[in-house]
Image (tube, rainbow, N blue to C red):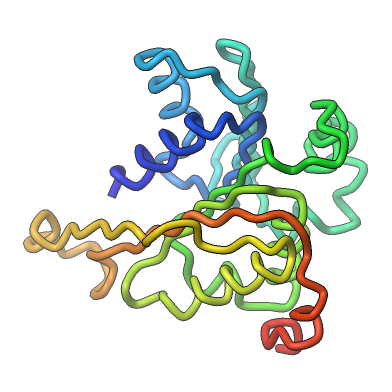
Length: 218
């Protein structure tokens, strides 16, 4: 499944993303791949990468080859909560701060987000969905994927992205089928052998959908 990360890292470097926010990098966060690909293919690295993931064992804030890489042991809902505002601003970690620090005016074209292997906890509560809405409101490009048995939750993420910033799929989804590789592997869940990856871009909240989005009322 690391083919997904490689594909996403290539796409973000090709697009010239200046800031990357990953929700749930887990065991293979994108920052190492971004650096490797930039080194091998002469890409320009983003200015910053933030991984927001409660499974992070050790918080990290390092700058390598000009890219600041931050790993934070929080859920996205905790990170965007008002109680974390002082923490975010003290370390210049909010997307809004990146927006200003990068002198991007009001453009979100260079702020990119990635959320791979979407599943129920990503959208389970209204706080989780609101956190995604806040994030997507600031980004111009999103890479999101889910396994066969989690497609309903990917649909919710895509709806939030469309409502928040009119982010819509830009091309046919990519399918990563690891059924053969996992045929004798017993540690995975049935249904997660095949993953579907979408790229979404756009630029502007769709006000009409704010009134009809079903996720907001759950």
